[in-house]
Image (cartoon, rainbow, N blue to C red; front, side):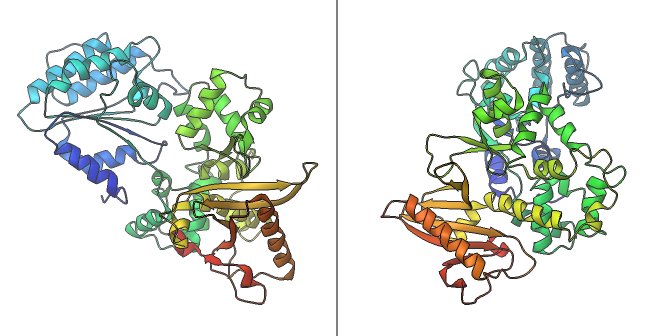
Length: 477
């Protein structure tokens, strides 16, 4: 199998593999983003030992320390350990791993991959001290050891490995955060899988599934995009119909609180402040609430940002495309309608969704937008803004504002449509009003540049002259 994208990650991992010194790598990112696939396909038959933890959040059974130890023991046996009994503690388990590695040490690189490391740290297991002892007491003394640990529980990875204040402090060689595919990488993936799809449809696929490789891998090349959406989400026995619950159940303890936050954030595109979230979800203020927000952000479900013109206010916005789609169309449906997408393809409901979802796609590709504008090398700050009057009544919503260090501000109007976008007299007045509202908020040194981001470009007419930059979906690729 070919690895799509991930060029920088591949180069870094290969360089570490060939460094000739002990290496300790932490790989993390959203569940289903392809962490295990990357390591498996890159190193193939070079593994000395590979183990994957058991999910402790299985709804049918809660896996305990003894289960994790038993699974670890089986992995040791699979890679050649003999004459030992199942360990009763993690200190003993890692001691057995040391014996296996000594047995297999022929002077070549010893590659150890432990997948879903957070799942192995069950209650009162003292997993972390034993893991620290393995690295500090044995592994670091061997120049040919390379340890890769991986986890989807991103806050656990950052707290216990990356930002560890104990025995692993400053021991990590490097951390690699694996992000979802970009639109360009999705296009490469579909092409590799011989799935014929226009960029217009790839953008809609991104609106639905995000750049999550696992979801894209489920596409059937015989089907159209609409047929694939129905087959994966709406039809009987759809593979992803219960994915939302599985996703959170596999990542978080007390997942209901996390799901409450995500469901509430789905009700407003611009998001909410921390205080608004806690009030709506009834989650108690304090460390627990902070941990939930931090965990959701670390796992790429939500993002924190400062609304334009409000530097002291932090808003949280739901940014995971799959969650946004699921909560819009499937969350409250007792029984999804068969062939829903094909039957409603041109409906007002779906067209309205496309407009909002395309905005989120653009927010996921601000670096590509900056490149199209020729400002990649300029420091910028991106935000959105709902301008309000003195009584708090909304005056205008601005999809994307790019504040630039060169005192220019791009006011981006984002529109998803099936053909070239045309500004008529009515919409021209709206845009001029938005520009003026923004000008009144800026300093005299700043200049507003009206920018459109559309599917197929801007139709030139008597009202298009005020638009200074026009970006299309091709630029997002």
